[in-house]
Length: 258
Length: 258
Image (cartoon, rainbow over the protein chains, first blue to last red):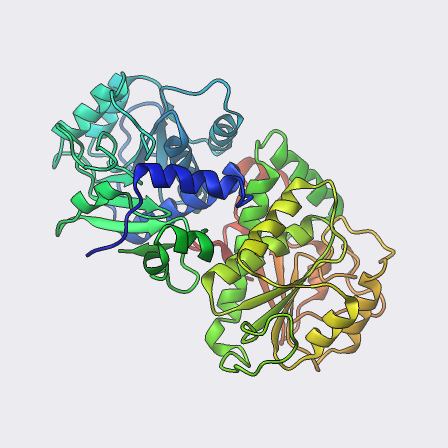
């Protein structure tokens, strides 16, 4: 599998271009990106096939009525987190999934993220408030899927708390916890070079707009890779060398498996 | 087929609620609504089945390279028009359709509509500037589909020019032109009571959020009715009596055929 990738610098430039001369609002792009992530999850992990979909066992006390097919959504402080919030909303609206949020570092000044959170609160999506609790929920056999929307292509190390302990836990728990779906970048990975040291090992990656260079380190037989964010026009595709990859979308699908 | 409908007053109230306490932005809602319209069109009129998809005959001179499977998008001055602009963008991005716009009354102060238009211009979607030309294009056998995104649930008569002549033409041409897909309300119809006098006769209606009362006058054996705009939460559904109708959505579909 080979494809053109977008460097971190190019991805930042492309995003700027979409929102300046391209006239897209961040609300629009984030809605399409998060919706694409949710569609990719639905394709790869439809409600009927996730491990504990039929389970009605009640554990924990923050969401007694909604534990079947639990999806833990780990939300970072920036746009990658925003994509996760949108994906969580669509999964909840569709039914068959029970998203729970862990969103420890909320921006106080960003109206969009506050709005996305309010939309989830109105859908009664529960929120976990402490690191200890989220680690326990991650380890619980009641959890079917973990969405990693912590850091995206503009992430620069170091990872600060509580994300450092969270990512360490995810990395140490490989094979013992539910599959991880990373949005755009597996959090903790270097955007260009991939795994750095002790890194999480996602089962699935959803690249947005185009894969970033670290995605080249992602492929092996057990991993699945989707592309979403079907919104760039021909001129932008030509400018960034993305014509081949965006031509892979089929019909009216918002995502494509690479 | 029976279903709960939303009166014009209730639809206006629900929209206000989504954008105030519901914390949705108009950008988000319009993106989801327009995307749903495009998906419904794709389901009902996929590119391979539309009459002249294979035709490469060149007529008219405003879009010489893009006449196969032409979709004429009639864009009104308000939010219904905005939904049409978003739908046109997704159809163009997906390929297999060649949307052309007629958007005669552009708001000078609405940034969102200007942005949606710019996104289409960047995708090289052509625009027809005169009523005479759009009437000729509507009548052309090269046109496969007509999207009526002229007026929505907040429309109040009278219809002003150039829309009056346009709607008259559509009404008089019934059976002689391509199928019309109306967004939310068949333009010219009374939102509550349906057809008024000389009205257009759409082949397909895409209701958004919930059908409006006039949709009850829509059904007959040759017409198809879709619902899109899958974004209301349970409390709002309960408040407006929409639980049954939104429960009809399946899987991760953004639209459902009623």
